[in-house]
Image 1 (cartoon, helix red, strand yellow):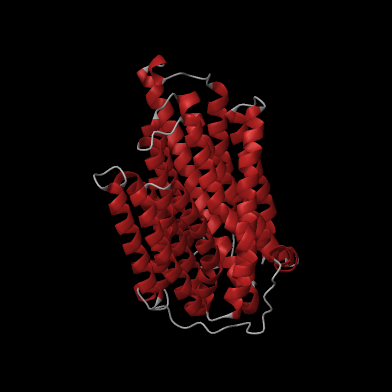
Image 2: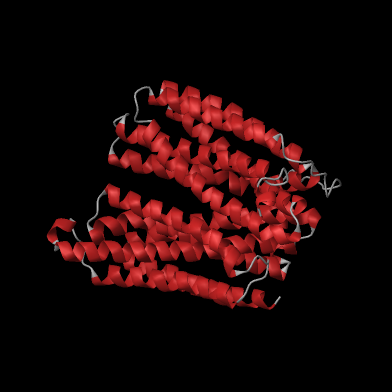
Length: 422
């Protein structure tokens, strides 16, 4: 395992994608903290900017994923990754200017192009794994990429929130973002060559037609890949709904403050990372799903149902001070346990499906399959957020949101069962 982890076949790619994920989340959180605490924005403005930032980052996945998949299949993926990581260096220099001048338009523009950069990098990143790794290393490679991504998200969110509050924080943010982008680019230069597997690939100039063709031919037209994409899409929707509903649940049902909510966010990220590592043990290193794997998906639904049950039994509270110390302690630990267990089960759920897609897809189509998966994930997260907003505005409680998440998770588990027979 040590030879695999630190080999040139894997480590440069891992480092390049790790620093990219750190930068994405560092930039987003530092920008939101600056708006919230340093520019004197009101609560309505903060909420609007937060949603705008999330939308700007995810929009490129809808617009450019099909093009990204076609380009990654057509050209040498290693060279392609270097160009994209060099692009990130220039974006971070622009972010440095944005922080230095406290210019929200500049930072929002950078955020959009960072989303585009991630959109183009993702298909090549995952397509490189089966190119450079042996069959018995594929699951482990996805485990390390998945776990490393969640660790990077955690590091980026925490570092961005801390550094921007320091003296000369805006200047320090620019320096750190640029250094990490340069480190990612340097690592990408050591990725071994990955010659084109589809040099005759025709690049569609119509991004919408290209998106439709990928979803219809590469995803829907292949039963195994279709089930993988649907299942992992449900995971991303459930995870995004957890993140967006947790502040409301914490405030109204537990009476917790911002620190409690932040702790829950950290717990969820750590749990998914742990689950990604446990996937290797659950599947015994093989890219083959089994009954224990399906039980873990169901486990996410069960623990989510317990959170829904708690939410349904608790009245809306203005603060934990109204409850007894014993009740406060019990609720905190029970929700913490449920949240951690849910995240662990989710981490086990998501990573093997990525490896199974890589194994099932033809080499000349793999990047397009990954691109289609990214499109589906982005759509599900956006649809989940819109749906939850509509339901909450209609007066439905947050307990029903969690119950709905559990129901969809059980549905995904049933839909995934046929994959265990391969």
